Length: 73
Image (tube, rainbow, N blue to C red):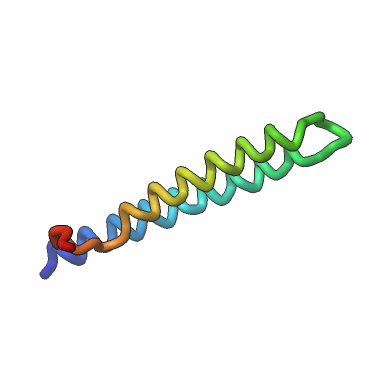
């Protein structure tokens, strides 16, 4: 049981730290929206957020518990 607590504590520490890092980087990315300091095209913004959405879905799917049932018709 103690082993699970250690793993849980390690997960919480790393997950909180890494989540806060991602949130900070998103806020910093948002600073690029300042039109008086930067010029960008809508296509570039679409590309950025398409990639972020894609990566987010990929990482999120790693946390879902999927059943390992075989496909049947």
